[in-house]
Length: 307
Image (cartoon, rainbow, N blue to C red; front, side, top):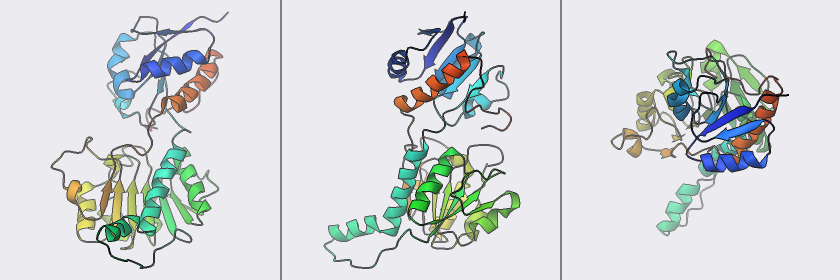
């Protein structure tokens, strides 16, 4: 006979998560609404989980609602539990976002809109994604989905990773000191890397200078991966064609930040791939079944590596 497991959900969407999990009729699970001494499972947003760690002595597993788990990586915090993050659910959303902006760039959608507004018949030719080269910084589960989508459009795909070469849709892989070779001749550079000490400001003046002047940079990974002053300089001096940023070093972006008015910069607001409860609940339910059978959980985070 299994002992009962107790779950608390720490999210501003806790009610939605509770309904989805209750519908799954998981065995041996009680969902609590306030922290108790015997709660052993948490499903939640890392920032909220961080604040609750001290009041959960029996904790053995945390399922993060987000892919990024930075708040829980503080070395001063306890690490005596299994941490799993959300994976396998953001690839489609990220691919739509990235390809959407690639198409807007190639097809000059915003420029044609401006022409329409000023009643100008702008019949200049537009570009195509076919045969263009996209470079993916990071080819995890999200990067692999983006690579597959890029291949559908006939693009050449390069991948820069720490060591893995798991996606068959990547035409050539680069590692370690190959970063500048990776950047040479790219039409598009896309950052999907997690936030770790190795990825901090990896997109710096050197990398941006290695790109052709017609290249577009897209960041859907994490803000700290970019040297923001170097990117501003590259945009202001037309060293690259433009940038699309969904993430920033400080969020929300301060209203006086120069990015708001930088040339050829399109911004969205950490909205490229939202954590949707129906997607994340599936990840939790699959993992709970493994947890309840004392099996290895999916998407375990290595505290040292940070992903």
